[in-house]
Image (cartoon, rainbow, N blue to C red):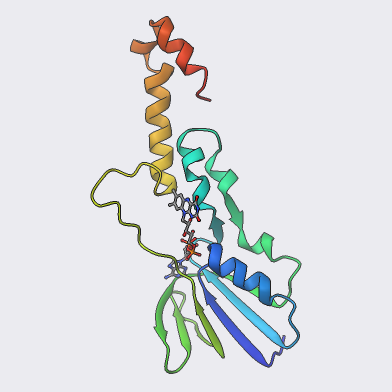
Length: 157
Ligand SMILES: Cc1cc2nc3c(=O)[nH]c(=O)nc-3n(C[C@H](O)[C@H](O)[C@H](O)COP(=O)(O)OP(=O)(O)OC[C@H]3O[C@@H](n4cnc5c(N)ncnc54)[C@H](O)[C@@H]3O)c2cc1C
């Protein structure tokens, strides 16, 4: 599709998706949305994944699916390895280089938990916490003998 303005968005998280949604369908505008995961992870719900109220699939939103009705937004699952703000180019792990009229950097941030264990900071940590809690609350054989602990375990799916 030819376009007067090419916008390249790096990162399909909360910010990147909000930006792409705003620009979708604007006349003469083409959007390339690049994300290494290919899905948006709704981080505020990671606590619910850690406590087994939701599964990790419940907090992931496939980017292709989100923009399937917006032909002016092209979703690419790829890793951005370099950015040249002077030349307005983005280099991808696949080897492609994209040129942008406008470059949006929405690649998120690196959390800092000041060396304290942070069980809900990533999806894999959430899953590990959930497994630990599940076994402590009833799945482990040594807890099964305690009626008091079995009562608590009814909260854990
Ligand atoms: C457990 C937890 C709970 C939270 N609760 C709240 C809350 O209640 N309220 C609130 O306001 N905020 C909350 N936050 C913070 C909120 O989730 C973040 O501020 C928000 O997700 C930031 O959005 P973002 O788009 O900047 O980055 P992200 O959502 O992190 O998205 C960045 C995207 O960029 C992609 N990416 C990164 N590097 C590259 C690369 N090189 N190439 C390609 N793609 C790349 C990633 O795959 C990711 O999809 C919480 C965060 C956590 C971890």
